[in-house]
Amino acid sequence: VQVLPGVYQLNGLPYNSMQNTFLVHRDGATIVIDSGDFEQIESLPAIQQRAMRWGVPFDQVSHLFVTHEHFDHASHAAEMQRRGARVVASPESAEAMAASDLRSVAWDHDRVFEPCIVDDVLSDDQQMTIGGLTVKCIAAPGHCDGAVIYELVLDGEICWFIGDLLYTRGFVGPELATLSWTGAVDFDKAKSVETLKQLNERPCDHLFPTHGTPVIGSAKAVLGRALHYALVAWR
Ligand SMILES: [Zn+2]
Image 1 (cartoon, rainbow, N blue to C red):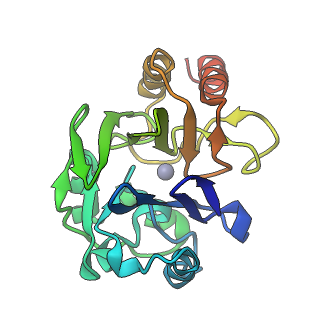
Image 2 (cartoon, rainbow, N blue to C red; image 1 turned 180 degrees about the vertical axis):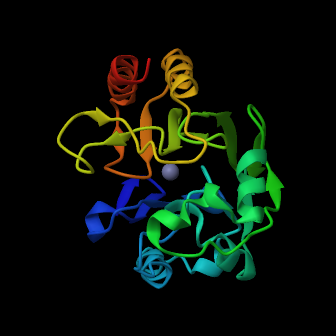
């Protein structure tokens, strides 16, 4: 499913699956943001096929950006690395992915996380340029310590790939936004609220969450709603 020019959703609700994978193929760059399995379903072959529908062989993917180390968003990292992609993550997520410990939440999917040594570690406010694309990392701790957002400015519009910062319509209900899963060993309520507060101060046009539908054009309303819920539930 093409969501914006050159931005494709390769997994998630349109494919009757739970977790999103995004491909950005434009401006001389081919990158993937988040790729993992949910429970027992092996999703990487299907994701590759869907990329091919848009004429993108997966061996063209130069970088996999991981928003956080959770199994359903990062379990393909080691395999994609073997196929030539460089894996990018925050320092905390890189440590968790190498350790393959409880932080990967593979236990919640009854699976084992294949350890992965991250190639490029990006900290808060650092950016990487790939072809004509610049990807900026924004720390977003709370859901887990390593959680980050990747910001891309496409055609002058600010796109945030937000991982499990919040869920959007269709995943756990019809609400504009719902709070994300709180079962991670390093989930932190206070950090979650602070992250949502800070993000609400920044400009953003579009949201690409790992669960639920992308939000095109009303990012601020969704972020505001999530902060409202977090203030009620997590203070
Ligand atoms: Zn998560």
